[in-house]
Image (cartoon, rainbow, N blue to C red; front, top):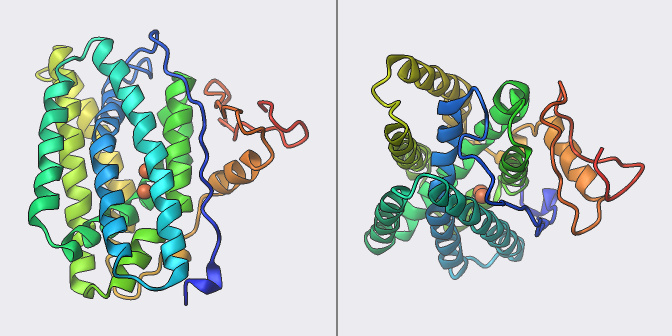
Length: 299
Ligand SMILES: [Fe+2]
Ligand SMILES: [Fe+2]
């Protein structure tokens, strides 16, 4: 299947999410460890996503297909919105009790700079395509289990986290297309699913552990069991799909998008540009936050 046959534009949404000072880093009461797992992932984004952008922009210099080049431009704009929003959220984490996260950020910055300096473009593209493939499983997990994972949580954090995942689905094909257009070998793309996923997971874990240590929970057996349980749920939900994306013949276009994601995208298209799509995390179903009869207002 060519890119042209399923060419849909990637929309860049500049949503004014707000992170006022009263946001609690444990944004999901009763799910302390899970809150920090998401916080740890958020911490990586202002370093990972600029790396992805730089890699795809560099690849664009070697790609001639105009559709892939257009996709890359949309991808870079979406990822740019993501990491800037995460950076603002991460500042709140540091200001509201976790200043030591700056040390993890310093290490992340140095780590991604080393990758840029030492790794070939093909390696970095494979890492990017692999990580982006893995996120499809993460999105399906977060969306399909949203009641358990986000129910009763701070909507300002839940809404921004799920917006990010919606757009990951929207641009799921781009890093793969860039890798294919750049002519990288199959085996390296397959390996990239492992290296990209494991590397980001390892960094996210570092941030999570730093926060749990600060809270005095890292050596607490009950806390550790809760962390293992949620980490295990992550692996069960994500690993089979990630392995499937590593198979020969994988095409992101054939991966099903969750219905909730499709509804979110369709709903946002009816909303005013400055509308902030806040989820009702107390609703038993956490529906998409749009009322298509009254564009621009919450459902
Ligand atoms: Fe992103
Ligand atoms: Fe992405």
